[in-house]
Image (cartoon, rainbow, N blue to C red):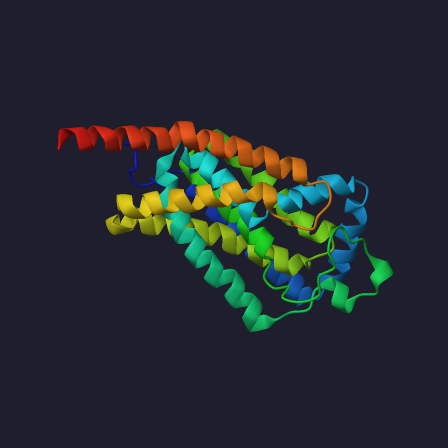
Length: 266
């Protein structure tokens, strides 16, 4: 069977934790200085200089289904990502949906004059804090960063942060939502990896295969998902095909071959 050993936290965890701390400090500054709305309008205005298609696709790159495809793709080469991915799905759901239910914060479209900023895609009004897309983007890339070569740290972190900023560009979230969501994504992804390193039962082959099965099903569904953002269908189809192809040849075929070998020995 493919290597299902536990993820090993290396030197990448320190800069990622520092990044989370900086994001939280920035959120504190925004809150104490009462500049949330002004900063939103400023960022939303300047991001209009770039095409809507770019921001729509970056926002889709922060969607849960895209993240699932990326984790499936990465896990096809680093199967030790599967256990923390399952833990992340559980903890992330509690963090994001728990926060949204607790605060029920109004989004920019419910507070600001409609013509004062640019909206791409659906007009959302409720459950603003924290940003689920920002959490998803940073948690997904953090897990992958922890499992790959350090040289990928900055490129992947930049992609995650741009995806988070896209939530302001499309008019869906305040900067405070994005900062706290992003920091939470990094911290909970690190926590998920740490828990899987600390507790061996989380790496049980049954749980690992269950996670791979869930990720595969989600990847199959991705091209049929309507995210309500324009220009994103080609990316959804491409990432689904790439991740499923990698999963079939990099994970599932080796798993079934190993199971067949074990069956023949019995």
